[in-house]
Image (cartoon, rainbow, N blue to C red; front, side, top):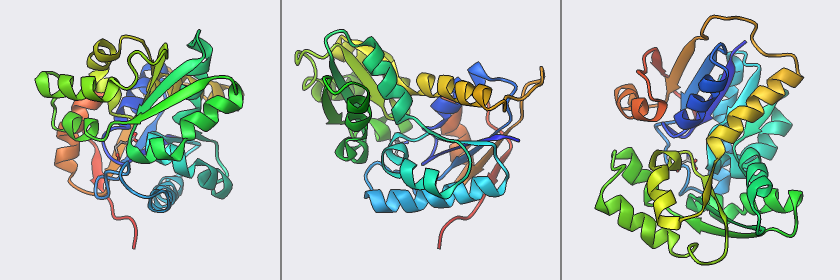
Length: 262
Ligand code: DGL
């Protein structure tokens, strides 16, 4: 059975990229909810509803494990998805939080993400559950997603935007910054330059967690052949293919447009 992965759009492809790097033999179904992106500016209730609809679709295709490859959705809907669906559900917040706690030496961590992710306090809760003495600063960076989707991955505009947002973190004593949004790995170097501290990429950490959970449950695909990839979107498949290739780092074909919601 395949692994199901969903995100609000193309961003979750950074997570899929890490999963396929680590587990190339796995079959993957990816759903990008491109008709309703962005999630990061919406209320938790709406993101929960969208996330349940996405999961209903993917589970109807008989997946063995679900990856919520969206920080916003992972921040607000994981509990509901775990209660409602009888398969392992992995989000991106827990793995990123665990890695941050493991590497911070001064017990001060900063997190950047969408407004809904930062307002939810999800990283703060996840980090405090592991080590209550760690101090956390969260900064919402809402302009990063549209800039990255436009392909502005370098140049003055994105550099100045990064400097402005990250000035709140620079010099506050944190030694670790969690990239709490699917898009941010695309401008990792610019963020690193602007903030000057170590970065945690939630996508990389999530892929490790997927391997771990599948291994523990004896659910890894036993094959030497590369797995199949199939993509579903709720709008504009051509645009998804074009933008998505930058995120996934390879050509995207095999896309179907589907309809979700009322
Ligand atoms: N995928 C979202 C996240 O990681 C970013 C894009 C959006 O706002 O939908 O939070």
